[in-house]
Every structure is written in structure tokens, then in C-alpha cells.
Image 1 (tube, rainbow, N blue to C red):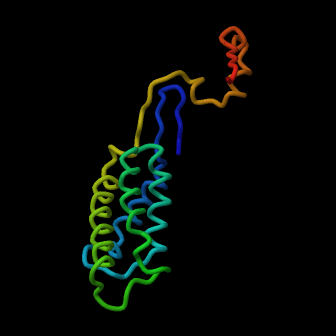
Image 2: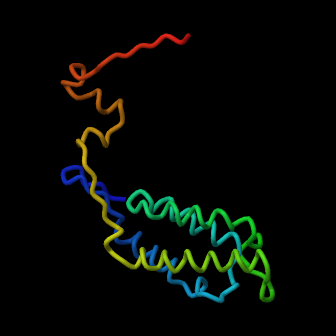
Image 3: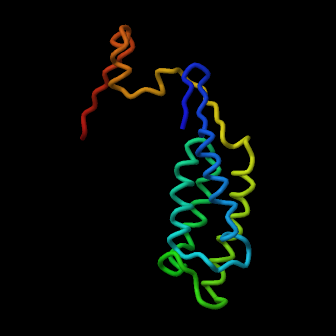
Amino acid sequence: MHLDPLSLRLQVTPVKRERGRDLVFDKLWNGGSFGFGRWQVQVICGNCVFWATVARVMWPLMMALSQVIHTLPDGPVGPAGVPAGDLLAAYQEVWRVMELLRLIVGSPHWWDATFSGSVASTLSLRDRLMFSDAEEALVWVAATLI
């Protein structure tokens, strides 16, 4: 990720964008392909978490995958034949999500995000307190539990 604090822009670097495209456009994910197992879907979910820092649309897609991931065969290899029932439904959901991911990952629009707020809001509390006027903006709050 690249953060430009002056323009308040967060971007996925070009190298990561290319790797993301290579991952989701792999023919392994084509509809009708049973060549993948749970391990590859976990890799996709991990990448979605990373991408979600810029594109929040990744969260519901990752959640859709997480609902069916337990049904997929363990490891990197899919079933030997054509599955049926819940396993087939799980593969169909993965194909549906992967088609949406291909649309998102293939579009440069999703790899760049802007946000509003002060530059200080991007810093940790410790870093913020190092500014010379931080003490003036500090408000102490106390509470008593009953």
C-alpha cells in the first residue's frame, strides 16, 4: 500500500495490482473448474483482506467465500469427479464471487481510495502526541462504574 498523506490517498502499488490480476484471472477459477480446493480459496480470502484497505467492496465477497470454504476439499486439489449437492453449491458460489472479483480487480477505479480527515488522523496516538500543540487539544475523561 502507498499512502500519500498530503492528498489523503491510499493506493495499491502497481506490483500488487499486477499480482492481484494474475491471481484472480487464473483459469483455475473459471466456471466449471473443480481444480482448486480449500487452500486456494483461503489464499483469495487473504488477498481480499489486504485489498479491502482500499476497496471496501472486498469484505462482502470475502464473507461469501468464508461461508462455503468449509465445504471445499481440504488442501490445494479439488474433487476427482463432478461433485453434487452442497459441494457443487460451494463451487458455484466460489465461481460467482470470482467473477465479481475479476470485475473489481480488472478495474483501476477500485485500486485507489481517498478519504477525508486530517493527516494526524492517519497517525498513531503516540505519534500524534509528539506534535507541539497536542497537549492543548487533549481532553481527559473519567468515569465511575456503578
